[in-house]
Length: 268
Image 1 (cartoon, rainbow, N blue to C red):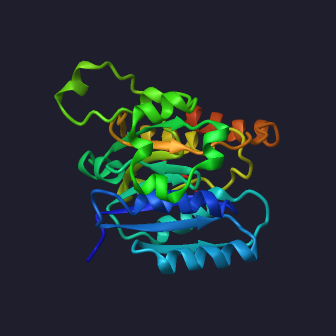
Image 2 (image 1 turned 90 degrees about the vertical axis):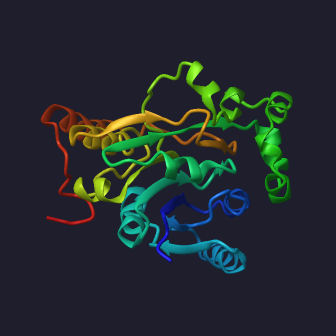
Image 3 (image 1 turned 135 degrees about the vertical axis):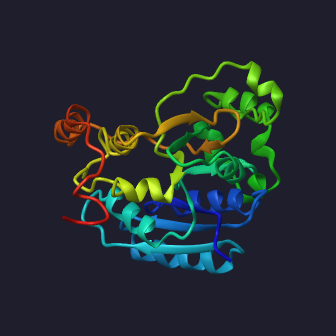
């Protein structure tokens, strides 16, 4: 059966976090989706654990990997996109646990030329460290009380509102989070995927894709209170290295109204 969606997980070394993410994916209300773990050069022992995890899981999951030659997230995401079979491509990070209806909301709201942008709850440091797959599988992350008592940041983002009540709550159409967005496979192929010149986790690596989709006629739709995920706490990465270089690429995209990058899936 061809999957309705492909969920691509950006991953690097955090196997404990990935197990928590899989716990969330294994309780999804829609099951016709595939999972591609896009691994940006994890260590050999981590790769072995990922293999065990995918073999034991009931998910339709694949692991793709390339050697660690620095931060090459966009390159491995393009490899995942090239392998994908689903019509809707959903992107998450390997430290973001999905709500039970996460995949469903990305699928039922999918349209061509439409970028779906969800939001996330930021889990507290102490709570993140004691979190277990069993806790996730029991659905306890989906309780607002859990987040109010465990110092989660943006706990309000944990509220799931699938019915008419949601229409009464104002939702700004904000920018895309690289850890929680989806778009049709065709729309991504049309702009040639991610720009692989971005070689630092600094600025623009996700925003570049957003701008090119918008330049190509796409619109953004907020899935706040619908496509919910829970971000596991970790120390923040430095964003200084590569900032000027990344920013120059991003400015070019905005100024020239670039749509398709020559540095994507198909190399010119």
